[in-house]
Every structure is written in C-alpha cells, then in structure tokens.
Length: 110
Image: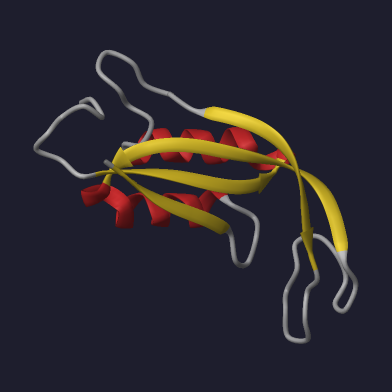
C-alpha cells in the first residue's frame, strides 16, 4: 500500500494527544491500518506542541478544570491512510485517546 496508488484517495491526519498516550494512539493507528507506505509501517511524524483549551460547564475533562484555560505539552501525530478506512481509524483513535473530544484534523491529499 502506498500513498502513490492512483486508485485510492488518501488523507493525512493530525491528532493531538497528551504525551502520556502518544505511543498507545500510534499503535491503535497502526492496528487500524494507518501509517503504511510501500514496504513500511508505523510511518508517523510526531512533534511536541503546546495545546490550549478551556473545559466548559458539562465537560468531563481528562486534564484541566471547568472554566480555566489549560496549556499542556502534547504530541501532534501526523499519519496518512486511505480515506476508505477513516471510520475504522476514528474508532481506534477514540478507544486509545483519553480526551472526551480528541482534536483530529483530516487533510485530503492530492
């Protein structure tokens, strides 16, 4: 499987996750079929970022307090996958990710 396969539509995902859960999310992505290119798997780019958020009333925050802005060190995991497996990949992320509402950006590749 390669991102150069002209018969498939590919997307890149950017997933923001606490550093404590980065490896678990990467393994979940792998098991769901993301991060494969040719004769390689576990193809991820991981960078350290600062995340900012404020839980609102009714939130069940993994980190932070309702009404207070939090800034924490997170990993941004970048990975490509065929668009056709997105639902499987989303389910895998949600099972491994500790946040109530994980931030997942989906970018269509051309």
